[in-house]
Image (cartoon, rainbow, N blue to C red):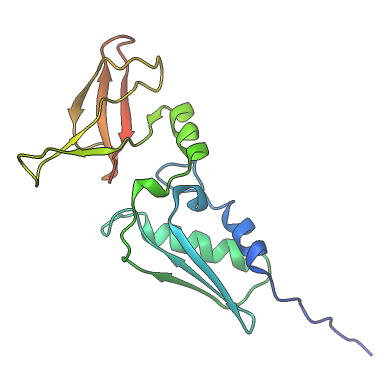
Length: 170
């Protein structure tokens, strides 16, 4: 007689641990957990639902991230996996933890700063000075609001003469 042991339902901690191994395809030094896009994990009757909030509503990496989340959970024997996308509350760079910001800098991407709103022109945003991730100089200049992805801009350091990207603060 052959019997099969029932597979134990994963815990929320199990799933959060698995998701910590899913790296962002555009910033592969950060996991989806560190980036702050995973909002919630629910487990019911063997099915796992992961709620995510994309960094940008039009982020081209969303489909890849969702597929990677599903694959990571299925790799641990969970057959029914759902990824639910929510846009409210909107993702903010404030959800990136300090440790993740340090990883961005070590990878050569300036972490997001805090936005300053100019009082006289409320719809115009100005950002604080950006520190070079290579030499730590504050003598940097914005070269383009548009970097390799929508969430990054391109800057140039006048001290070490290196171009670099910054993760935009939103």
